[in-house]
Image (cartoon, rainbow, N blue to C red):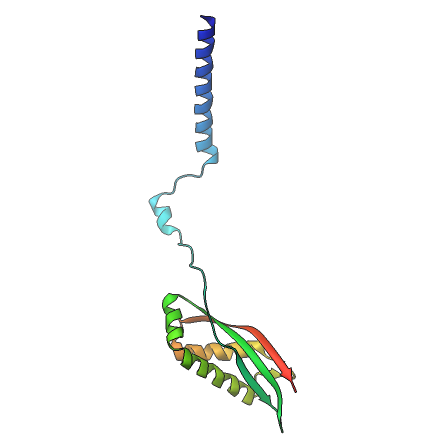
Length: 153
């Protein structure tokens, strides 16, 4: 008889301990449930960035009498969404032509090269402006100049 009483008391104490632990967990450890107003106020996570890689551009820097160097650019466009990516891909020949024309113009005007180094910031600004004129202001977020390779003669 003593064994049964001890067993019942043990089960009651175990149940009380589990119940107390559950209450303490819900009150102090578990995050509070979100209300409907808080869920509306939360921003949805931003989708991953979409990059459009362009073919490399090779532009000669011509001096007074002859070409002095060849400059190769690897450019990637950061676009805002899938529709912007398809818009860039649909107009890719025009984008490539505009970029090549812009690079040649910046060399001709002397804005691309500072001494013997390429002014990457200036190139990015000119290419971004050309992109905005061609595709619109909200299509390309940023023009990324991934690699600049200069070969001197």
